[in-house]
Length: 125
Length: 125
Length: 125
Length: 125
Image 1 (cartoon, rainbow over the protein chains, first blue to last red):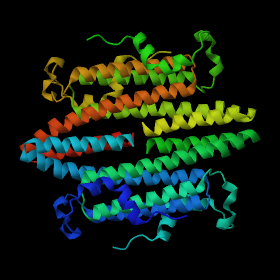
Image 2: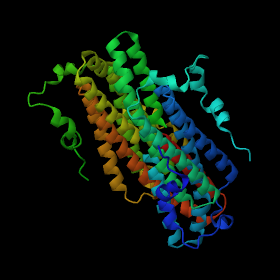
Image 3: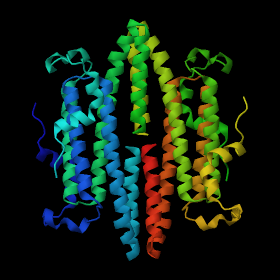
């Protein structure tokens, strides 16, 4: 079986964000304009761990371990990624939304509409 | 930062399943006694893809991409892993639970109780 | 404001179940062919309480109480109805599905497919 | 069976909000200081309908209708109450949170923390 490479994934899964990046997108070191993440290294460690959980579940299926045990691990992964999402959302409200509200104008309402749509996706997924 | 190795993960995250394996656990090639998975290669491909999604989200946080875009990718990952869980659960009901019910005795009730607990974890996570 | 009457509700919300009832549907006293519910009076009490929770939330909105407090009550109602759903599903697996599996034939697979679809709706809602 | 009266429910289910009300709580007509709800009559109609859905599910259990059909109605109720929650939350962010952010000071951070906690309860329920 040919597994999807990391590059394939970028092109397909991350299409939404890719289209948002202009051709002159900043190099990684310059991305600090979205520096709203309160404790980046904490998130990176949690996401690295979640990637490991996904790899562990893949191995359990490959080894045909007991289905209920696999489901237990899937629930753990789901809770972990949900925790990351709630943390990022809190950071976003604290920084982006509050900053936009202070500036006034339509920007705050646009940020709130975006945040509400993201919350709806989380609640429904 | 020292990232958790795959082995660390096994010891910690997969503790529940590890304790279920006897010292004489079969080698991978012999795991076929849980051969209830209807289309294993399909699950493996989906899980490989989910692992890639987790890696993509890690990179987005590392590059401090826009929070709402990261949340969109997290919702996509959550839906994908949920789909795997629902598929595995369906397979489990179709094979393990039905087989236990045919045999009669307490085994079917034990299998149902296990399945119900797994469903509750999925619904609440 | 004209509120929907209980009869309106039956016609609209419960359309799915109504269409499943034959013209010769049994009178309430004869409904015992689905006697799979392990402790009916417990469910009825919980559902009566949930109806009261919905009424309480309606009053909170009418009195324009603090939004966060209303959301807290909505989460409590959601958890309560989820608990009823998980209980009913467990009863269903224990009785209908196990009985169908014992009989053999296609009936068990039909029951499992129905149950899996119901589980998917619960997980995604 | 003695059903819980509406008053019993207030005392028990709504304890959280009751304790937030000072003894000099305004009479219903004066509650307008939380006038953040964008279309109150729309919410009241939806909640009245949800109350009717709960009553319909109670009747289905009482008549021992088919379990899967009851679960379908429960999923519909869950989606409906979720929709109310997402609407109220959006109104809350648009009004209370934005207003607090404009005023500056700690108030905005307190409002965000409250909102994030409410979002976490919704995502996890």
